[in-house]
Image (tube, rainbow, N blue to C red; front, side):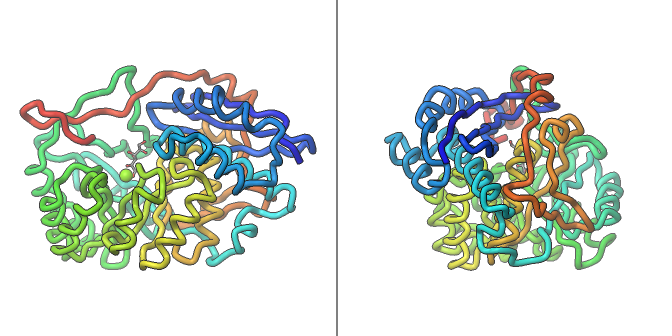
Length: 402
Ligand code: CS2
Ligand code: MG
């Protein structure tokens, strides 16, 4: 079976998505997500200008060989743009293989290891009182795990705090918005938020928190220690992870579990973190970590070192990525938790899908392949719009992570 056509579709049904569609001479097609939030057109060009010409005429059954061809053959390895492009091809080829076999992709990955994929949602609000109301809503919908983010008293806006009842979307303006950050105010506030939520909802609800890379290792150690009485399921991205050895310091001070990896794009970004058991959850996901094939490799390494998966699942990961992640989540032995933020109605129209949410679990469909598609006609009604993630400055004006 040969690849006969490859199209890159950039659309903005509420937010931007880049999708690759591969067609074959046997009439079977596959889709892959290639969205890189705020840098979408770089991946679209990488695919259209440099990858599509290599795909035409290739055997669609050779997933691993195509992955190696694109990874090794480019000479310039890794990086978010390259790995998102490779991920899109890989995902589309798995979709095709499933359709040809007449099986959902999770069956090709070894079959199910669990009944459903446990997900967490984002509870967020400006104040702790409003947050309690939002958490209550998640509990009522059956969620077993909830991420807690609130505004910080004294700061005008905080990254990652969504508005309850709306679709989560941090990338907004034509130019990046700027916010002000204070580590001192933050470290004082977060333990009080956790205390309030634990008091209200008891010991069994899994509580998570995203630090968005804003602390130094010793500050992160203090945060982890101060949250221990409220037993968080994890704190995420406590520090920037370019320096993997930095996590040793956090580990020496706290038993609060650590989750990292939404910005990682290859196994080499987390190899030391995993091998030295410096983290508990690896948050890499399909689109940003080289597709189903490479993410499986990362999860298999993690399984050897007691590290579980916790894949990123914000709204900038399209329904194609989410569907692919669910097949992997269902199959691997060391699944931990999957992030899930429902997409907007427009996004759902452009990407018809058959995964379902019930009582805190997501279920990939039993349809052959990934069970998700791209409606090209619907996508054409939503042209690309520039959007950027915001930036952060300290109170004295210094640039700071997110
Ligand atoms: C976040 C995301 O979901 C998360 O954990 O960190 O909001 C992330 O910032 C965006 O997906 C960036 O594109
Ligand atoms: Mg995050």
